Amino acid sequence: MDDGRIIFYPTRRLPAAIGRGAFRIERRDVKIGPVGATCLALLSAVVVMSFAGNGQSSTVFVCRMGSDVLFASNEDGAADVALAWTVPPTGGWHGGLFLGFSDSYAQGGVNDVGLCFGTTSVPTPPTTGQTGALPTSHPYDFCQAALLECASVDELEPWLYTHILARIDGTQFLFSDATGATLVVGVDPMGGVFIDRKYTPFRVITNYSILAPWLGGYPCWRFQRATTDLQAIASGAVAHSLGSVVDILQAVDSPNGPSEFAYSNVFDPVNGLVYLYSWHDFDRPAVMNVRDVTATAWSSTIPALFP
Image (cartoon, rainbow, N blue to C red; front, side, top):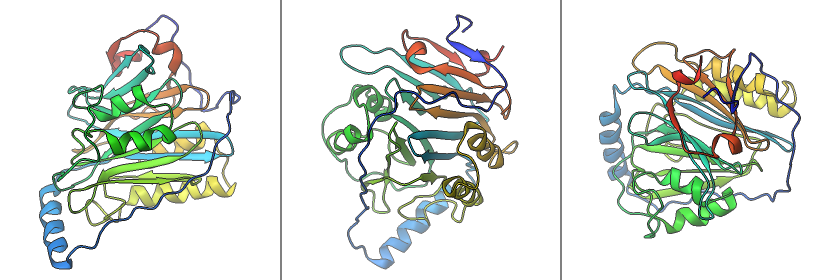
């Protein structure tokens, strides 16, 4: 990718923001029905035992200050090859840049109008049902379909309620957009799909369920560290910038072990930019303009993007 669409330079400064739009504030709280305490305890024990020993170190967060929004992720996958690929806009759908591994199931991505997402593994029970029955444009990856078919969290929420969310088991997804609105979708302790939408200065997910913290690695030091640092940004004690967001990614870095992360990314949905980091090198990002790189279809291993 040496055609000018990807730029490499050692910087943690963001360019001046452009194209800022209006937003509306919404907050939706998750509601789940009552369950028997004994059944829930037994189910949770089975699920957590099945997850034990699977090292996971993904951290995903979004941080908003005024009209500036930054979405960041550390993605683990030391035993696999990290990939980047694009889907160009066609037939009224949006173009998208996606990041993931050899199965081409996207672990994160951003579209050409700023809707973005990241994932973390969570030990959920098998899904007992879906939110809707409509098929998606991608048969086994609803997140890729969502970014191609939706422009914002406003559009995404009703879309999630009406479509088949293939392969949602064992995963939790954080979505955001250029307004800073956030939405988490995952599987609840009884196998149902939950959707939790909020509009807050920041939001973090790691490898436990936001709905049922006992599903996964709670308490999580990465969640606690990211939350502390994001609170400092939200209070104004630390500047909201690419540098401060990358500092958080580096602070929750997993440089070795069975769950060493393979890449990190920061999406700037307001300005349509992506900062991609490979193998713990936070000083030399590959910087991409989403509209430019999604003009054509291409795929590459992430290490190959760094000359």
